[in-house]
Amino acid sequence: MSTSDTVREVILQRIRAALRDVPSTEQPENVAVARDYRTIGTVVREEVVEEFIERVTDYKVLVQRVEETSLPQAIAAACAARGVQRLVIPADLPESWLPPHVEWLLDANTLSNEQLDESDGVLTGCALGIAETGTIVLNGGAYQGRRAITLLPDYHLCVVFENQIVDL
Picture 1 (cartoon, rainbow, N blue to C red):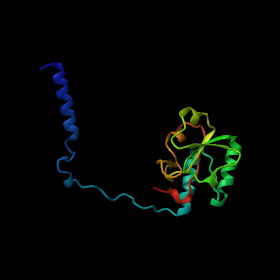
Picture 2 (spheres, helix red, strand yellow):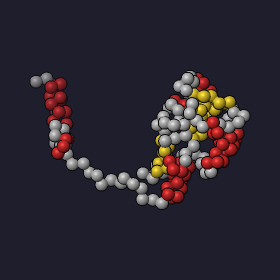
Picture 3 (cartoon, rainbow, N blue to C red):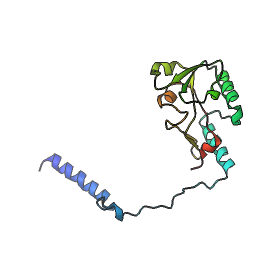
Picture 4 (tube, helix red, strand yellow):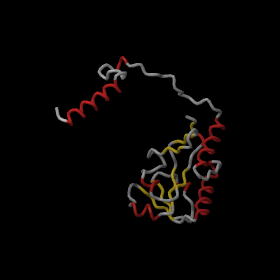
């Protein structure tokens, strides 16, 4: 037996030993799956929103709570404060969100990486926000556009509605 065969056998023995208590994959119906994890939140709604704000603020994110009717003005003010002149937007973003006096770079999977990188920022919605971790989930759904538009610009203005915030 060669040295490589011996080494191979030692590795395989270690793998077998590590897997000895793992159920067989040939009969998965015999494997018990624990179902005692949380499936619904237990925290009061306002506490969930406050926790989300606290967590995203830890990431140096500026959070502004505004009424939906004031959203266009808040977006325009945020863009003005940041000096945004060219803003990337997904094709399905509501027109009412679009700030005046800003050039909109409509992306329907058409802007190049250079155009995205040269913009002053991007405005999107999101799928949801997770309070426990301060995570904003983008899945390419409504008001989000493709992934590249949120990765290349240096500034991302993201609208998260309170009903999109979950505690789990």
